[in-house]
Length: 267
Image (tube, rainbow, N blue to C red):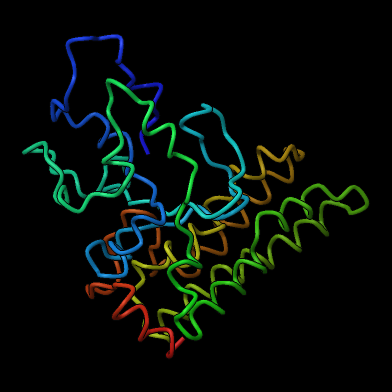
């Protein structure tokens, strides 16, 4: 969601309605709340347009204006062309392509008065479990990945005082390798659309651990090693691009009610 501090212009008494300037849409897509669940389940917003910031991952809190570890999943709309611009924002016409079915945060956000969005911002956030729990096999796979690759687990490894750096790096390398391989397998063996990987498993650890290790207070050599580990392991599966906004992968439209569910049986 947009950084509220950067667009709050409620001091301007002349602004009382949206001017369709697109500033909020250009600063990042919204996060989903439980009230938005039907938009995904009914295929109105496809999972290939979403990505998950996982529990424990560092994320910028737009209300408190600081970087904090998440207490639960944060499911968001991807940006276009690896930018923050919401993938559903039509820049040339300055309009939302899903306006009539826009998520709760978009409805609540008023740049001239952010009180409503601040009130709902951290409440009733939609999680992957809310969407996947009843899809046999798939939720178990996602839950297992979360347990093996949780940021809480990684943080404990990075902060171990009784281990040398080689042992720490070995454990982290194993976790990054699993995260990379499971993404490769569900596409190659399970037939899943690679565009939904960031929704199912969050962004690749090979990418996110670079900043996570930095903010975990580790030595410069450990940070450097983790960065090089991620690059080395991810390069072995360079045929897969699972970053938010990616245009690679299958062209199938993966919705919760159709291809995501069917793919789970093959995964």
